[in-house]
Image (cartoon, rainbow, N blue to C red):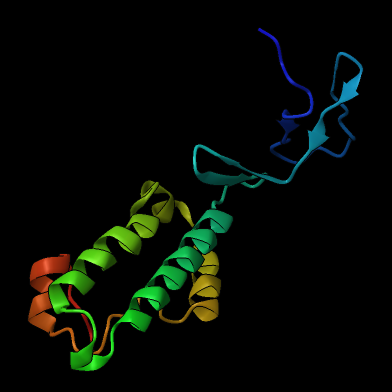
Length: 140
């Protein structure tokens, strides 16, 4: 197996006081504190706080784009808004879902303070429409 040193990264897990230097055919492998692998951001602490923050930020951006297309009764029909939400917002929050269970309360609190409403629903969505079509309970 041939390794490309330019594309290879090294991440050290745990408390290591010594500087670790890894080389491949004379090229030093870059040491990183976080790395995105298979769509999941991993960090040296394995707490996945960076992944959760990234997912929430992506969901917020997607939600804002959908909201800009909705202009009360003059905008998108409700069923199209729901479909867009399912495709563009929920996918960010549901990808690598087990990671959400592993984050600590402090990291979750920080994310919620930074992004207080990660997936705001359009105002005209009724609670029953959200419950039936989105699979969760919406608050006003």
